[in-house]
Amino acid sequence: MSEKKSKADEGTTQGFATRAIHAGYEPNAENGAVNVPIYASSTFQQDGVGGMRSGYEYARTGNPTRTALEGNLAALEGGSYGRAFSSGMAATDCALRSMLRPGDHLVIPNDAYGGTFRLIDKVFSQWGLTYTPAAVNDLDAIKAAVTPATKAIWIETPTNPLLNVGDIAAISEIAHGAQAKLVVDNTFASPYLQQPLALGADVVLHSTTKYIGGHSDVVGGVLVTDDEELDAAFAFLQNGAGGVPGPFDAYLTLRGAKTLAVRMDKHCDNAEAIVDMLVGHPAIDSVLYPGLDGHPGHEVATKQMSRFGGMISVRLKGGKQAALDMCARAELFTLAESLGGIESLIEHPGAMTHASTAGSLLEVPDDLVRLSVGIEDIADLIGDLEQALS
Ligand SMILES: *Cc1c(COP(=O)(O)O)cnc(C)c1O
Image 1 (cartoon, rainbow, N blue to C red):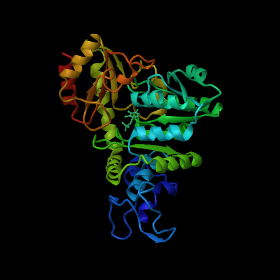
Image 2 (cartoon, rainbow, N blue to C red):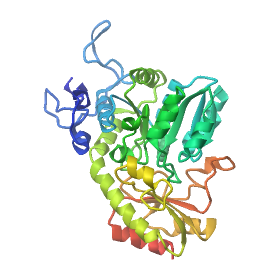
Image 3 (cartoon, protein in one colour):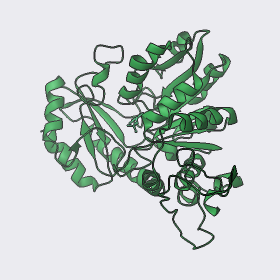
Image 4 (tube, rainbow, N blue to C red):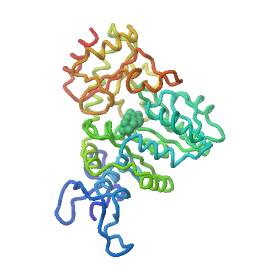
């Protein structure tokens, strides 16, 4: 039972890296296991009819390995409650269905993650949900998009793949002024760089597949909130619809989370050096990175992020063909979807991650290349990009 006690519950003032390593689990009282075991058990013995021995009965409802992960991620976001899912999209689906009903309206980024847009546009639209895309960096556009039926504003910041920055505190005021909730998809920043709940968000969502897992070896998602009622709704649907991670997935994700602080600093160091190399490169038309002075979201990013992350997008002077050529020539930067892992990845959003936005308001430029900067040696990464652009 010691596994269930979360340090997040103790009103800790511990630092981020300490919480990353310790929150959610204390060494097992019986055998001292320092790491949470992978509880490969789908069901748990009862003390009598209706008498739960351990707080667990069936692993869709709860599993101790998952509980450890949920406590850890809640603590990393500074939130009271965490619910883990089998993917970021399962978490997205749970949040949307818990918070919205037919006839409700939501505001989404006009450059939302392709999978989020596809779920809302292709599935939830059929169930009577309406949405309006608005630029996350345009507060007037967000205000104008809100209607009397708006129940949620959904943002990412920085956005994927254009790295636009939304002012979380200002957008939470818009949402709350309209009796709507603010959901922040914090996948790109990770809780190490940005803490949306402290800035007024009601729910934080992660694809833990990305920086939190960090090793490109497991798919998962999480919802964190301080709102007891929302958490109860998430828990109901987590169990009711069952998009839960298995104990091995929960274990891997937690193992990744423990090193988030050191990994993120290295991702940021490497990204900053690569941005320096790309700015002014003759093949590059523009570099999209919130850490750049000239980036339209730089001031807001400086206010709400501790550093600017490991994601960089570039637009190429030579258009679509030059973008495709860069992707084809890169060697150390592996051509692959996804992001946030220790290995550097390169991709063409228009043809890959964001292909589902083609022809819509959310269509991304075809001269765009997205880099997920890993934690390899910086000289090797720069060498690879130089040859890919030559
Ligand atoms: C990857 C991603 C998702 C979806 O998460 P999965 O784990 O792939 O289901 C949602 N939002 C953002 C910003 C993402 O990058």
